Length: 277
Image 1 (cartoon, rainbow, N blue to C red):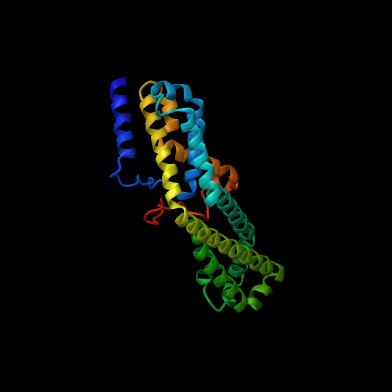
Image 2 (image 1 turned 135 degrees about the horizontal axis):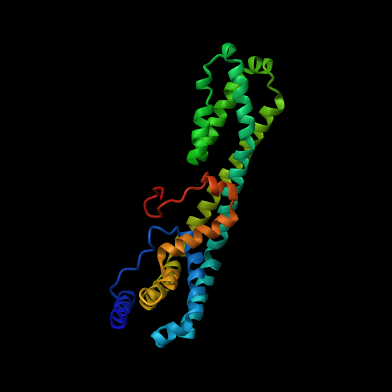
């Protein structure tokens, strides 16, 4: 196993250092803003296991190698602010969910008034927009949520007299309108942050690739060292395990109820295709 591991790592080194190689692609399971966070987790494991790494290859895994890896992580963050962006997007997700939750009780009350007044409405209750709005909330479709809130508020305005006769108060509509405005504001903030991120990534993509190349080397070393001898420790050098660690860290920044119910208004996407993961 030791010989096989050494051959495996040597091949990885050749792939990384070949002058004719193409730049090693960042795996699609990672979003680009996660790369510095993932590398920080990886650096911590690498530092913990430095004696094993050095014993494995004292010419590759030197103190300078670790120092340069940390320096590259800090360089990427300093140039792009990706870790800050990652935390900010988690906050926006939390705030979006919180505001959606705020108007849900009011939405239920408004639907109740519509049911009470169904014989006097200009449209059927089923066409009021309640069902569609809840579906957009469940799907995490912020633009759809805003569109359906507008429809519900429009229908409420068109049937104000009938709804008021059944107990609707202006404060309820005001609360829904206020929540709608806050969600729209957060949605614009989210889109602005995404644009800022894309510009920063485009301007500094070469440095991000350099960081990932260093991470790939550490991942290869960790896999060679521990995939047989210590499967528990080997998980710290697994891409999937690192992804789980990033998700868990982000959950700490998001509303725990939102995480538990899975209603997150910021969907994870494949960085290369734009499709939902």
